[in-house]
Length: 495
Image (cartoon, rainbow, N blue to C red; front, side, top):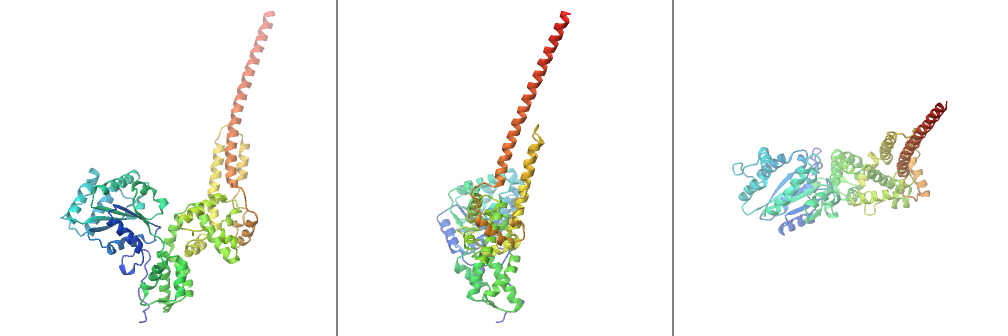
């Protein structure tokens, strides 16, 4: 059959996959969850990067895990991140009723005023009504985007909810909770402190067989992928399901437009820029999750990879941080620490010298080139210097001469660097970096900070000495005046 140009694109971006026939892989994660429920584990924590497929896995649980005495209710907490707990619990109660298909006359839903008046009514009355309706069946709450509630506007109330839930789940034998968190292990320590000694599973990148299924099966009736095309998609996505969907979505659109249904490696390369446009929302999470200094290292690794390939530079390929090492941006020690953190979070490969996902690297080169990110750091440094100068100016009885070093040090970090110019200057810059690797672990900014503190202390001591000196001078003048008065009095008496 020759597909019609109007055929719907079968690949999905921007929403979780709820269709079982379009969900591929995750057998290990599903098996982990099923086994722990069978063992009676009351709380299970599932975590991973955003858009890695946690929500799709959540929808798959109730359809794939066939345990006779477990009823699953999914609830997305992300939409309630700005709501008060009372509103959240009321909506959760309504969701339980709806998904279990319980008629409203069978169960009384706790409303906001009632929850405000009786804080534990959801647990002590509502849930017991649900248990009676379910008879011998257990209730499993699947809470999606749990970390979205970690908001300063909720604060202590949220912590109280977590602790209350942790307490109740062990009191209610028929209540189970599976929490889906959109963060890395290092970022969910607050949950681990509350829900201690619970089984944890990470939703990571897909294996090769799952990648192949996700590429081929959704469009099996229309597209035919050559093996080289499948490998090209694998190389670009590194097995990240969101980026696989984005690439295949763009491939399908182009095939439909050209009525060319055989997909080659060249076709994959052709749609990369379009895929980057489609994936902006997903890329935004990568970027917003990083600090300013992490962004610089992330962009530096991407740029170093580009230069290393272009110039066949083996040393730069093995150690991309040399691109920053010769410039007064960050100390080498801090650069290494940042790279280790990015590696641990899954942004860099295990060696820490390459961007883990090739499509992300290409996006970085287009949207966040290194020289732009360094200027962002320069702005922060200027603010820091301005604040230091302001502090010194507010110190009493210190000569204005003290401010001159501060004014002199407020030169740009990047002003004298090749990185301040057009990206082509990077090629020249790299060779200069290799011949002049700094050995100290302190940048000029750090030295100036110490110098500023010393200067401030010296100025304070000087002020104190001036006060003492002025006091002694005043005492001497008073003593001299007294002597003169005595002398005058003596002369008058003699006369």
